[in-house]
Length: 274
Image (cartoon, rainbow, N blue to C red; front, top):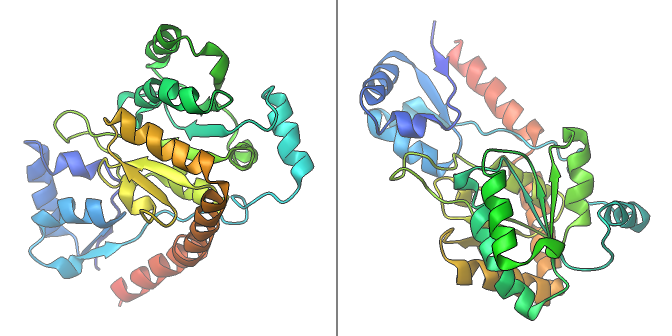
């Protein structure tokens, strides 16, 4: 029987660190097929494979019926009312509060954003060990009234917050000399499925989760000016933001739905079973 192995992203650092890289070489030798998430992870993991045919892209799918644009303005206004905001520009970032997600750099960019758009609000969803550090940055810059922490929420509720926002930003960055990176960044795709323009950091496979210049922008996660300028460009050009959001929704429907990837995985298993 043939062996099909699935990778999830952490194999990137396995591939770079002894003795885990030896394990990757053994996996490459032993399996008939290894799946990868996107171009970045495939390029790193693929260095251990002499036969490129053994590598097959199988990505996590997006539930496009769960993550979809909300057309009912009353529902959007209800969420904004819950957050105690009105029509102000709302920047959303969803993810565990850890170093590589770049929440600290987004907070550091907020004074520059607020200098031109003092009505802008920043909403964080998620928990993590960096919360105290982020709180200290907010206090340092005196922007407490412009930042909201919602903590963890139910997965079922995420679409309503995505739909209440104007743009999604997670300026992820690599850490530990490139050992800790984003493998892909499913949340970018979930945001795009809700027709939000997205801004992603250039860490690892995060750029695989958008079309730079079409569904959003890739930024250097350490470049505060670039982060601020891209956010402001979308806030100040709502028509462009809307077009990027629509392009993102269309792209996710055509390339990232569960139907597409489950069919691809089933086909892979059928072929491998023969």
